[in-house]
Length: 209
Image (spheres, rainbow, N blue to C red):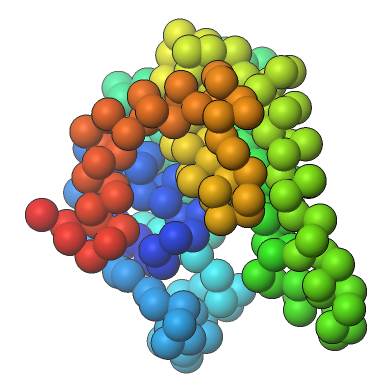
């Protein structure tokens, strides 16, 4: 059985949603960052990065949402969570996911994780102040140029949808009104109605049901 390590409120929700959408059996392990669970020796033995998510398979450990989501889509092709039969479309999906990972997530992290980049208190405060602008700019690009609709890739739901939903959850805490982006806002509402998303949110909060 797969074992999935995550923490509530983190990007790991994207892969948790993918697991539920695929209907895979897995054992959830909930880490609490406030307790520094991610830096404990037993977890570092699984993921030396000290981050989430981490998926333990019978062949070894996979980390990073983009890798985990692609793996899930490939081992359960019947779930149709990625355009596996079209290399170009698959690359387009991964391009979208990579932007979320390398740009949107970093924008958000400047609010609470500024110490990763500098020890200068004034610089950290400056980074925090910039977050609403950079997050809004990123979502404007997603809304206007990258989101096809009604799902990220068009008519077919993919793992990119769970990833976008996860990033969109952070807009309110970053002082950005999701309603500025009608397509993203409508997508967020549709995601909340999906049974797999509801189940993933329950698991995230420690209520696997």
